[in-house]
Image 1 (cartoon, rainbow, N blue to C red):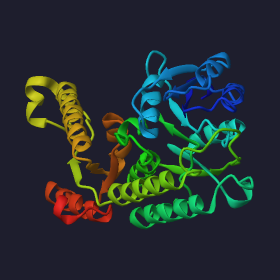
Image 2: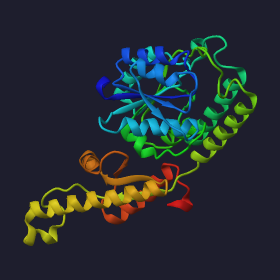
Image 3: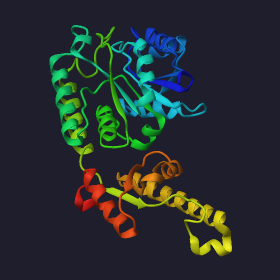
Image 4: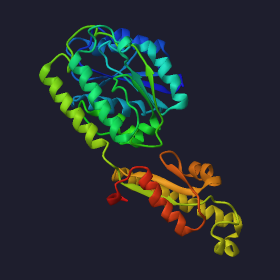
Length: 336
């Protein structure tokens, strides 16, 4: 996947580390490296460009805004299959990119977990560690998905990144990303141990300043609680477009293949409308389909749908199973 993976690095005055970081990512086979600069005055943009990065100027402040801008740039022109995000202060080891990328073979989101034994002394102050553990615990309890860390180094498939519809502009961005992914039953999440180093120069924008740390902690706690709230559910009951088994009343006029083609087009159009509505209302879409047709229908609908096998024949039982599935997926009964 090396020719389809981009790395995004938000920066502000990281001249001490940015050159080595960009070169390290390129050596780890990152296809493209986008350094999103928020107004550095220490020569960071020039050093990044000299090392082989594409420098993006972002006048709007905010860590999340920089990540979103970098992700948008990564899909302009040469579209990338996955995007890596990491900090520009030298705390992330670019050599870990290869292992994170390889883990995408069985995942949609790979988190670079910072275990205590892999953290360089002084790299993560106590208050940062405690806040990280607290927010991770909230996400775990609210979603049922075990989250150990809210790491700066992570790799995500472009399809999932698009589907999460992230919009947090500040320090709650990483929490929003992980919370929304954890709340999506179809998202495969893995954690891979990585090194975490002391920053190579400059001043931390968060951990090194008490006021910034408090504000960031509040933003992260609020994001974790809000983003893990029960989501509305929206379902489609469908069957595969098999000739002779769908739209049978139209077979005399269209033929078996023509009727099946009409059903296939109708289902695809309906799925697109429902998917757009789900994205707008932050709903989780799923589909009720016969067990033997799950793969066929899922291929037609595309990514983002949670399939549920229909156990009992008939439309009535299928609708009943839609409600049962919504409850099993954790929907608030007021939002079905």
